[in-house]
Image 1 (tube, rainbow, N blue to C red):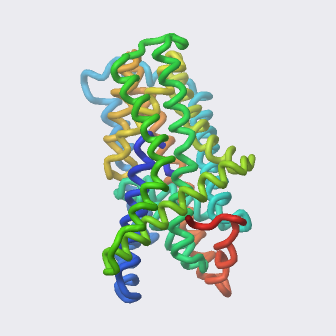
Image 2 (image 1 turned 60 degrees about the vertical axis):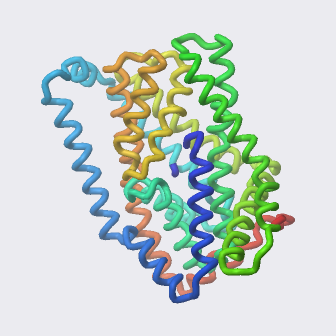
Length: 383
């Protein structure tokens, strides 16, 4: 995600990567070019800027509705007492989340990538995830295109894409898996619906177990019989997924500060922005339930809408109300948070996207920018 972070994001992204790898493994060069053109049709500067304008108009309509529609007096009262300092802090924290994502991106795809190129590509991916209605796959497609333009091998891009989403999702899994039992045990104050908390905690632990078992399961898939086109496609997809998982575990075991900091900072700065959004309107709900509601509510972003608009908002508001926050406070906090969650990566990412295209266009040898990074993780080989 940024990218943007929910318990089921790992499974969804693995499926997305698998489909793309399968497609690339079963077609000739001409059909590959046709697919690349179709995939990037919504990633042209003109289309991205149009999406940004549409997002600005939508946010403006929401602001107009809140300020004028009848029946929203309580909500307007909360907005009228918003603390400007906390609004600034929301933006600062969200910027920190975006930069953390860029740091993690560079650590995964190549520590020798230039920081300028890493920022341009990492921020452009986050803008694509916000603006392009592909359920988070837009950023992945943009990143694959740019890295391929830079000379990185397709198989390396596929496996590192898997590794990137695993590594940036690990903090979500850990947070839900650890916080859920603590909430159920009464360690934190606040309203804790037992059934919902137990369900999502179990889902988090099940996903963690699946992540550990998946390489073995994929190994069995790759050992299946058959020599046809479909068999080769399945083998290629399984190899990319298992190699990506292997890369992610190796990198996490290395405990590099920048990698761990980038992955956890991506989540924690975003949670800080979420907390600041509620502080803007007069107080922060109980911290434990708030953080767990944040993780659960982000599941609404799985719906393939631009920026998760509608799905994420409804999910977060519903989760906050479920965990004891008054409806007006939940709506005000979520709307303020979402304005920055969408706006910061959209604006900065659009600018970075234009800069990225200029970087690739002006480079005397763009195909050599990333070519040397394919073996940047020493000692890592596919199973």
